[in-house]
Image 1 (cartoon, rainbow, N blue to C red):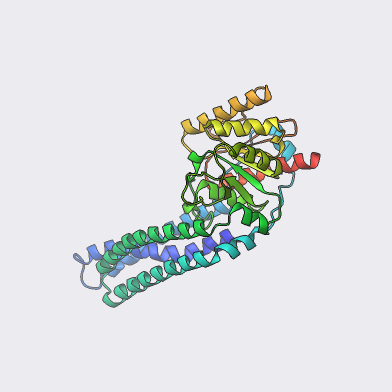
Image 2: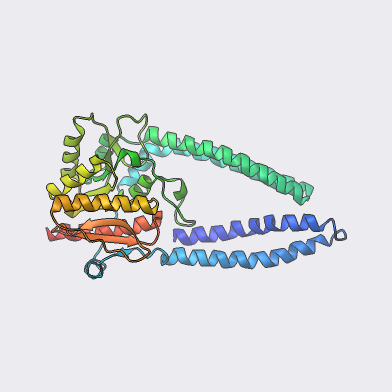
Length: 374
């Protein structure tokens, strides 16, 4: 329903604006060559040509998003697909909503109000100038200045919003005090903090401004509070998981304790020795049945390097070969494990945020099946 409402809103807003902007230039240029009053027919003609194209593009894109068919995230092994496809996912709960609203409401509301006020005054000025002058060129110039200045102000407002969220984000202790569910542990290399992921229009509110960690947490937080070990050198916590900080000589003991207490373990496969150590401990302590390994977005070489690191670590820890199931043109998004530790690969054609959400939900079927089997 949210996607449908967003698509309708986009249709009502973007098409008139797009048609207006596209018709300004030909109307202004033709006014030098045509008699007074005749230039409007050029505007009408261009509008008649452009409007159907925008409607057609809107319908194609909206249909793809609503159907989710363009992502095609699936189990790589057909045998595993037949085994897990029909099983339920980890059920989503809403306990964490109270945490978000109680702790972050004040700061984010202030930032949103400032952003709304800025957009309101710019749009009001835009309409007044165009409405009073009725000169398309002035409207076009004003629009260009508005967009440039608004982008500058918008970047500052986005930075302000992020800073407010970081300052008011709950610590690990505060989060676990409010949310009593068993935690979701996020493991990753500190080098991957702030990693970006490509978004797609209509897919979610402001997803193009979220980091990869925030995308993962948006899905995982429905299963439980997401926690992580923070970089002791960072000035403020990153957005996403609630963090606890430990010295260099104590973080491994803390990680082992978190592994034991967590109901699900998400590990973003990195290239550092610490990530390999964490993955080896997962197999050593038999936590693989509740673990999901995630391959973050990157170029072809980076993705291949991360998968090779995973393959070597798995084979060293389990003493058996790891054979990936990849179709031509597909990329590894996530890997879960059955009760005996056999990898269950989940692949997709694109490394986009919606694809990772689908991959997590497919992997949760495997985790839930392992949980019920025990």
